Length: 388
Image (cartoon, rainbow, N blue to C red; front, side, top):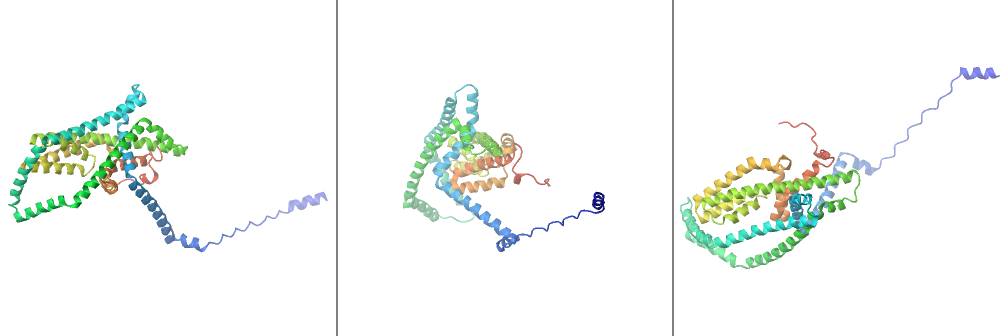
């Protein structure tokens, strides 16, 4: 029996179980089929885009309502990044942190006060001379207008003068003066906020940033550290480089104005320095203002000399100095600069125009280190070789 059973086992094969039937796919709802096709995916992305735009719009509106706080904080951040090397150098020399902060802050305030004092003194000392020159220059300009191909009569000139005098005597000027007083009060308040925030940024900037990064850990924390370091580096390098270029422009144009004999050399030089912080249009505006002063005070020939001086200085600065001082890492495409200038001007006027480009440069710098010290964010990586 044992052999029988053993022979029976050897001669037969064990039947195999059939493979299990695949599980039926869950029924697809009508909503899933509606949003799953191409048009549905486009609609989904459109809704997501509208949601992002709405969040950005709410943020922009909030910033515009809080400009008295936001603008001073941004200015303090830019200034802190610019003079941070001085504070770090003093600390490396053994100066206590608090004392180094006070030295840097008081040095900045002293320089700004010296510039304001020099401008006011120059305007007061040369105002009478400029007024007399303006009268003579306007008379000469009127004579030049009389020989133009089209006729401008004395009655038209008189009507224009009366219109200007009527505008100055109207209620709109009084309302504008009241608005100017309000803006002056806001400026003073914003200035004190900026000084206080600048002090704490200089003293405890790294500690403040580490405190803000406390909710993050791991790769996100490392990314926050990289973004903070690159932002400070970009803002500081941009402001210091622009300040050097602006100083060279102001000195060169100021020497040229002094040689030609244009009045108000110091105020015009300071204006050239300040407008140099507005890319693309700042140098042009400064040159136009200097040429107008020369035209009114001296005449058309001297004004042409001023225009030539401004053009030469700007060409030397743009072709030789700027590539060396700023470097390629801080240079943005002119289209990006133009869009940033427009957006900054719309949101915050001249202050926004000054802050727009360094903020845009710092944002682009943060994108460049988003995924690593030398690894940009995925959307900013080069996907294919560039062809000319």
